[in-house]
Length: 389
Ligand code: NI
Image (cartoon, rainbow, N blue to C red; front, side, top):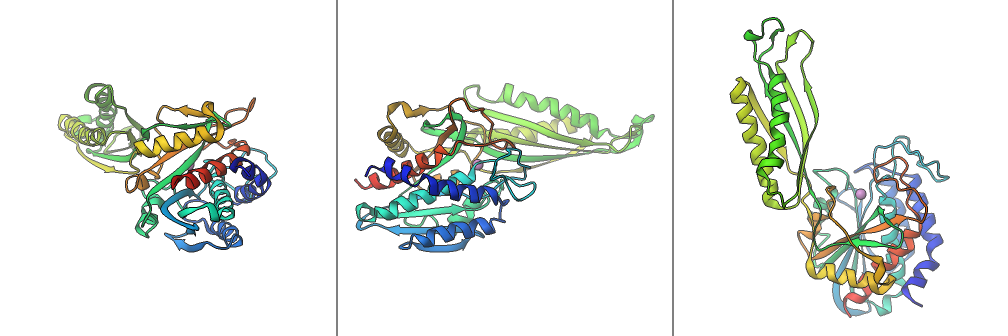
């Protein structure tokens, strides 16, 4: 039977698992029940070597093929978000204020589906398959990927693949591109200290609020004047807090922001200029300033050969028109850490059926079309089966 047909055959099973996971979402590093569900399903399949409680609630399962060959890893993330679900689905979240709004329930199900399909085709399988279920993807800057790698998830792995559900793409399409796909995501905090005084005697104080305002404005020139226009950079200051009362000169101003880049040199530039601009505005006012720049996830960089391989498999499985060459997104993913260690590729799999409304990821209404489940499981299966051919 073709991979597509085998995958379609287990769609009902996949839906049941996905709905169970969806009903029981858990936030980063609290994926206890989630981990149990996955373990239960993997154990049903037998012939897997399973390691549980890897880096917290992570699971690594390995399937050894009948013939010699390379080791391919497939990765799914496990955590949900602190969002109150508003989909109105019959299998809506039972955990108040927590929802699988980033679709990780689908990722786990697709990888489980591949585990199921591959275990049935063990005789055709060369080499090994490593199934990586990773906790805490949403916990930037300290996501679960680094810990999984530390605990040996990539030992002996020749290539790694993963997918993210993607509402901007129609069901049946898969988006991929070589090189940068998702951005590096950093978080920074700026603390500006001045001296409070009576509002009517500003000359006796040093105004941290005015300095903060100048900083916000001056920072805008980093992207517009310092950055190479051909290379992407986003700097957003999303939070600013200063002052205690309308008639007191503010003694302190705290700002927080994020910086998104693809190229490592752009990341270095952003950090350097954020500090220099801070020193500049503080010199102007007499305040002192401190920048705490925290590097989060690195950019997702798809390796050339593996991207080509995955693109070919998408076309072979679903036809040429299924493959979409996408533009990169400024969102981040800690799959980047695996790609930094071994060759591999990350793709976006479409989840919006015909006539369905597009709700973005991290939205309380996000409701991917479940047709993505068998499609995803089939593609992951094909990536593994054909790798050693
Ligand atoms: Ni996600």
